[in-house]
Image (cartoon, rainbow, N blue to C red; front, side):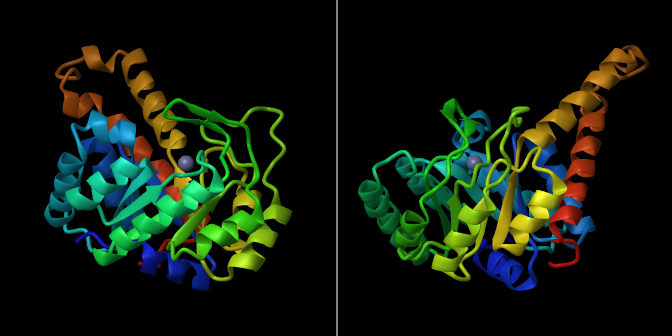
Length: 287
Ligand SMILES: [Zn+2]
């Protein structure tokens, strides 16, 4: 059964660990992440970008697939199905489709408009027991074609959005989506500490989890980050394993062309990286 992400993230704040959000793209991705969460007794958040939702033919398909898979695979750890960087309309569609959590990304709106739309969506979500993440300021890099530059959110604006009753908050602290550039400055822990001081125990979300060094991840968790989004890293692991399979000519041997064989190395690779992240984030055995 799907659950909202509120309790798992409040527990994470108390226990000083973080729950991974791993973005899904298809059946193999979903199966790999759910099985790894179960094997490691870890809570997990499945992220779905609007682009991935469209790719999978729509949010209803995604919600039905994930719910059925939880049942068929006997998954008993807490699983949240979460819209990643949702638009205003996208959030309403996911609320209707059976998602258990949404992120409304109003970070590109002026702060007053972000406040207005976020507070409306907080009500709509909470009426249905769905958790909601909001975002302040822009996080750098590329998310479905939107480019930013490692921005830092204003702690006072974070407080303003936090006070609307959101369940967890994404605040830019120099993190970037996608691969980090060689000249990256690192996370801004002063900004993180200031925001934490103003918002108290509200779980903070770190986007762009791919390529942030382990010591920075651990420090961020110690300063109140309770949800870390990982997307690109799973894609890179999948790609590398699939490339190796084909380069070694395995698709040309016997029934190596069978998609269930062709996609198997990528599936196993996703499981490896997801397990690594769960260990790093400290969510193993926290289900
Ligand atoms: Zn993000």
